[in-house]
Image (cartoon, rainbow, N blue to C red; front, side, top):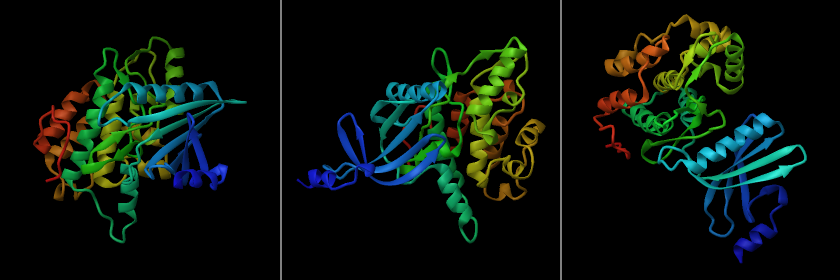
Length: 315
């Protein structure tokens, strides 16, 4: 009875329906582009979930939204966001996609970084905390890179990594996923890829070869490895390696310079192996960056973990 009354006396603007089941919206917890994320409650079980609503008014948005649903539906891995339910609703101008997901009350790595920066005295993750989260995120990304035809996430960053129990990370936001390996043979193809990257990737985490795509380029999944390197840097220092440039200058110029500034006091709290791992992923030459299996192995060695371990502990 309680659940029925909750729905009956809740304004329709505070209710979201997914295939006949209704959930009460508690509050908005995120937004980006044409998407909004809400904390919702099942009026019958009182369970809390997250709902993402995306209004798709162009063919590109429809394609990206459908792609995200497909990824969520097809992948069953502890480090890739689990899809509970979804509904695609036709509208006069396109479609609205509604996705029901587990709620991660610890938020994203980015939200945790933001919190640390706001402290009276800035605080940082410990190396073990960083590696635990990073290693689990890499295990999720490996599911994409290990396919027969590898696919790239294309928007790896702290804001797309949810923090679960035991600091285990779950990847989400798959609207930019695409085939990872591309051979560019003309200026037209180069400009098309560059334009797509400008529209779908976050500049501070985008690989240098995608800012100015060459007419004879070979692109592979190591664009994600660059983004992982930027993410590991941000987890260590509470900011992207190119954040200052984003505020005061050109991110493209900063990324293209190939210069990675490691703070002078970094070695006081981070091991040489950890710093070497960052720099190996942020190699300006994509052919010299490691593939995901090597990244997992090296991070695992720093954590004393086997590459085949799935669950992590914080003891």
